[in-house]
Image 1 (cartoon, rainbow, N blue to C red):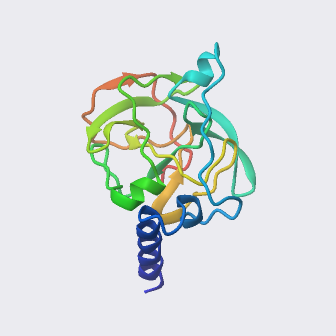
Image 2: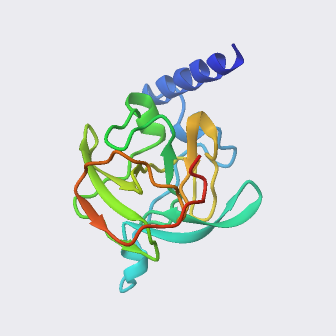
Length: 181
């Protein structure tokens, strides 16, 4: 019963945010700001910074860990209910957890399989079969959405999700581990 109330409350907040009643950052529970963070361009001349997916250190549950980040340094997440070929993140939820999209993703300092899944979001990027998202309340180096509404931070050792038939931009497979439950 408590879990359904949390989900319903999350949906209600997402609907309010979509309608302009509150900002997305406030709906996501960010105490620091009422507006999403500005996303600046990566530094010129830095191949790792320009990569679609790379690793960086971030604080997760009070501990500093290597996580996957986008070209702006924002932590990347996967949504546990997704399949390797279908995103279940739509509507207001997708506004709070924007999908990472790219026609031709690149990787730096990651050893997993990077793919593009053509879906309602366009060309959504997946890592080891897990579709990737950002969180509107995150900043580079700070993970705020870990475990919230079935979203989990993606790590370089994320266990591969089987069943993906998406075309791939592939690098060698990563060992099992990370937060892949």
